[in-house]
Length: 360
Image 1 (cartoon, rainbow, N blue to C red):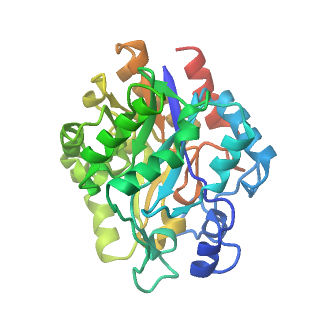
Image 2 (tube, rainbow, N blue to C red; image 1 turned 90 degrees about the vertical axis):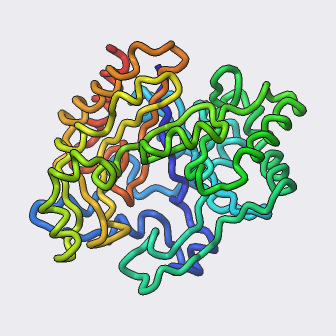
């Protein structure tokens, strides 16, 4: 069994964020100014062991890897941003990992292929939803350049592989109309450059109805992330009518108990060999979205343990190499979606996952 944790690199300043939001903006900006929107709302979240860290500091990256090992995490999936025509953002942390050889911890890459909108990062400060930078797909030459920009990573001994092929995740596979040609080009280049007999492409999806569409494009597998089931699952929708009314008509965050949500986080579809489930420790989007956010309240280490056991149960009968689970996420603090220690629970989520993984 392998657990792959999604990893957000937005914990260091970049000139683009300085221009859009003010000097020094990082993910911590939203985390630190988070508000309580209802009684006993667990905000703001406060990091403990690592503090409000800066990913330019190598010792922080090393400590993250140590904590991930404690949690039974096998690899980080670093979110990677390529907007077309060679434009990249937030590449520094992964480049440092690649070029320094440290930490000596497995990794893969996930392409977060979507435009950045102002309300994604800071809903309350944005009166209009302005496109900050557009995701473009310029064509074959750009796909080739994109591959070669990542070639050293694919050849790195730490890069996680499946069936001998480097794993590469696409966040929004169905937004990329040319994705089948893109994958074909990368597979050819992988063979040409001696990387492997192609790339192992995983499509990310938050909707069950999209899974077959993604596989039909030529993806090897799909990671389904069910934190949005409250918008798609008819059975769940019937159970949250009142919270939905408060959200739509009374400007309240959509508030759903974590104990209810974990019943829908993993389902029978994930028993298929090439459909990979997700572990979701918590969710609270209000630091970014304010009253428009959604909150899974009262997540506890005990409920998290129940959820993890459900996920392990779903994958236990698969072939060993297909027992892949994604953890959403290692450090999405702006979405209340993280495993790193905080003041409320310390390392208890890490201990729960590590103990269950080691004793499965």
